[in-house]
Length: 329
Image (cartoon, rainbow, N blue to C red; front, top):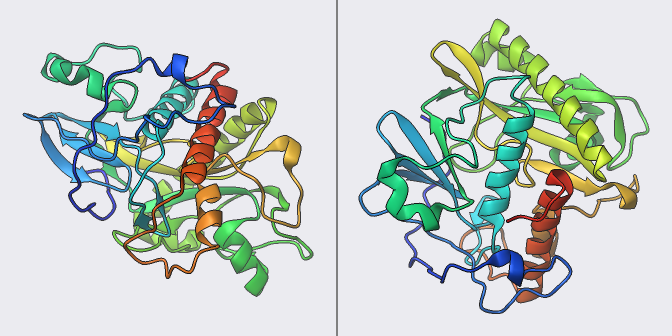
């Protein structure tokens, strides 16, 4: 069964009229005040399996339905308000990469973004529009497959302490956000609660077996290199990313979301300056805001102000538009 994070406390379902969002949102304009994020999703008649930090998972007997909400978390705490259209962006970027990477690795997706939904979901079509994905019931590996091409986040902190990241010795003299000589595979454990923990490749082999660890390392590095090259053509640096793999019918498949602003660090190429933190298309923008507050990073999270919500939405939409070459429908 796919792993999910801590269950979100019940919230009132936020509903809004079906709107032609492409007519309402200009990436450079201010968000309309009446556009509200979708924080909770319930489908009467469809069994909900789990409610994660972002996604709701429903059981369709022989498959799962993933539905991405507009919730946003930071420091493992879900904020009380969300980012409008975020769930659509995450889902559609994942669809985009699954389409593009089909020749590299099989994935868990069973229904493409333009394919009709099964009859059982037809009455929920509007609620699911743009933010749903039907996937096989793969058995996830118990490690996260992280690839780093630049020195940031926990990797930068670890390097400052001992010159290594996940046991990999790096050159002296690197600074925050330095491009690494070559991308590195830095696995992590999966935490049901709290933070994932960086581990060495040897530890990863102990957890999933040497053959599987070698295979996912190669797959992860190959996928990252291809995606990074493509994104660079669109003005985006993919500094690092996290992949998840699982077993389905004896085959290793790519699962979960892939190469999204929530699972990756996306930096604007034209603003890149080593030696400091970078502007981003991902939720680091929200983390940076939260770091200015007197908040102990435990629940409940603080309400995000309107300007942070608006700017975050624009960043997510901009990431999709650059990668896909068109606005989000």
